[in-house]
Image (cartoon, rainbow, N blue to C red; front, side, top):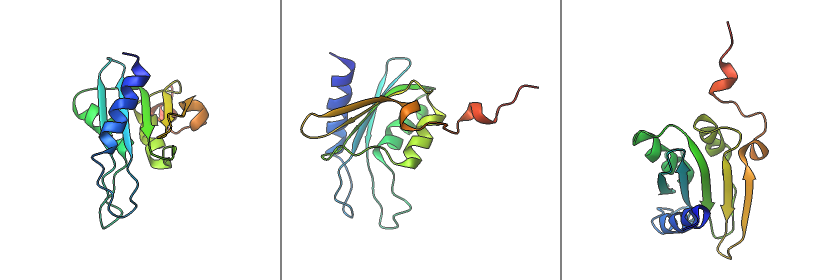
Length: 133
């Protein structure tokens, strides 16, 4: 199966588990790691709002907690095709490089595909603060 199609299917599956009683926005995300493993997650809202977690971060944290170190593709699915928020972009920058493929899909099958460097130019990441001595 095509990687992007599998990511889409996993993201849609994850969105169905969304806990979103406040926004009513069901978001699913799936990632592919450098070691060719797939992870997925949904958004989980909380009445304190600050305790809410986006689908992209759930998928990334699942991968990292299972020993993965780097993601190479991320798929974000919403009915309307929303892009990732700024906090999720920052988390992506921690565990990827500028060539991370970001795919944004909607319920009509439309997809926007871009490199992370185009989604978040001049990202602050671990390489930003490492200096040569």
